[in-house]
Image 1 (cartoon, rainbow, N blue to C red):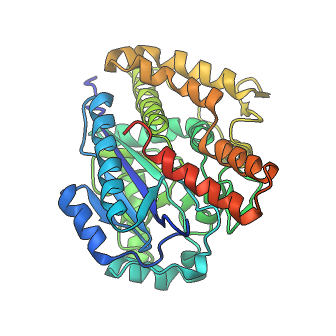
Image 2 (cartoon, helix red, strand yellow; image 1 turned 90 degrees about the vertical axis):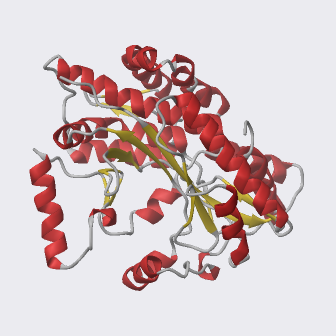
Length: 376
């Protein structure tokens, strides 16, 4: 069995915030986007809202190259935004902005989305991270999608960065997912027996006129509609660059681990989506703090144990790719906390120091501005 390319590409979405008010810049200067495109040709694009901007690495063979590319993109956006008194923040929600003030980007695709989704679409003041791994064979792409779905809640738990919504602690580590779940065609994908079965489902929806193409499938993971890749979409955007790289490494290595099993006529057990959805909720609600269900054992397992098991499962693949250090750095998220953990900490420390609620929320934004460019 020939080995897939397993090339790596990372897309990130950022909010643009006003450095003075710390609020989202609902109407950033149009020349800002053009300046970013000139500084970073073919790697910057608008997002659904005017207050957002998206970047994407080029397909990379090594995690070191992907990291260097993404660091350059983060720094480039930050440098251009600073000229206009703005800053990017890599956070899946903004701590206090009001979604009612936001406006969709003036582009046909986003205008149609806003029309079709109505109030659900207007609430989409959220940012995510997508990781593409190159798998040329279509049948293999579907088979690995079915199997790797088991690990998606684990990836979400490591990435959480949306604990606040409209100025209130949400009680969830990933409130972004609650907002995103309001869209059609979201959540965990079906289990498909073949690429042909997947295509028949897509064609059925296209023939019915409910979507133009497979890019309107907003599942937690999907075969990319543009590239020969398997695209992970469940994760919040990581505020720290190092955390993004740890998750991209882990996802890539998980896919190769599952490919190795297939090569040896083995496979990861498929579990009912209702079971995986329970772990998905636990990751959304608690992040790493309360553990997930190990369905093989039938019991809750501390998240640290799960991460250690995943790293050991993938160690041969990390050795193959030359990224053992990046794989093991996932453990640092356990000790340092996710962005959500740290946003809550900053907020509570500010309140304890006598700051008002609004001042505490602004302190969280300052924290996000600084952390977004750490290591770039």
